[in-house]
Image (tube, rainbow, N blue to C red):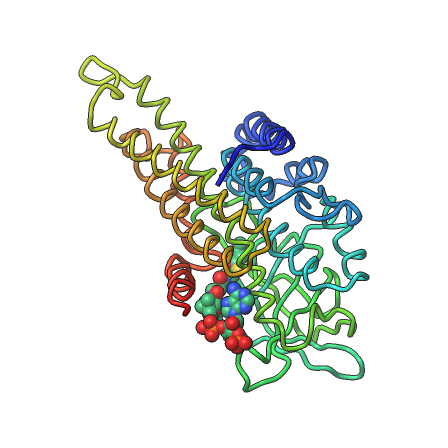
Length: 382
Ligand code: CAA
């Protein structure tokens, strides 16, 4: 497969890298420490077309392809992993189901505002008892007097506290498992819809992770997204795409940690020489560089399969890309701290933040164990 970037992809990469170097990286420590949401970065991403990368121009999107999207998330995450996931969850998890399953009215109403960054989106399938078992949803939606009435709580929702629009699953028919789930669009400010607990996290501290609470929340009939009963399949379709975004985020964090560790190894002197001259450090550098390159090939391959629309292929490859890139990010950030020694363990250097930020990529949008399950079930199909 040829990953030579087109002129448009190369320009996007350079634009995102310059934004990450000049604006995200200098502020990443501040946002990590204060846990403030980086509104200035979101505003700029809207201006740069990064809040609707793959969606058509008629909905105010940038009309680019999935490889461009993966490159954008990778570069953003190199500067600030929180900004990377804000972009990824918004693009892949909220806009994607509206684009693929929404009516033309829903697309015009929601995508046109979400793609510019005027509105931020979130996606709610996770609940206290429905994590890896996404079909274990307890939130209900009953159809009463021509309106849907939602009751229940979603948790660990990325962009939850800042989103203007949430797309969520709810049970519309009890007792039939995943076939009884449907998807809904809920707007901020709808009576009965509120943001619950905000999580205090290990990493990606500037991203908003909250509960969404529905207490007799009434929404119009037309806010059903897709067909009644298709909620689980819409969620799976959405996650197949979303996982490429998280894989790209993991890759960006790994690259940032590697760049920092390599520069440190060349500068730091012990026993009268730079530590990069010792074979113990060289082996770490070699392993880090090799794994990052392998992860990049998998991420770009998965993104290219998404461009072709070959569902079964990209479902498997996006799971492979997320599994490998997130575990690579873990190993690389671990080694980056090791190369820094004691300095890697304190906040004067960014590598301890990279290590904390990388950890979530093995958990959200499906744990590594779920990715292995998805890969194995695709491999073992007749
Ligand atoms: N695309 C379309 N349909 C799919 C599909 C896919 N990728 N995967 C499964 N399906 C269909 C199956 O074909 C089956 O359809 P039929 O009933 O018609 O045969 C149906 O869905 C049920 O499939 P399974 O029996 O395989 O479903 P399961 O209950 O065993 O679960 C699972 C499968 C892969 C474990 C799934 O539950 C899963 O992905 N879990 C992880 C959930 C997850 O990733 N959560 C992350 C939350 S979002 C998040 O983290 C966001 C953030 O913060 C950034």
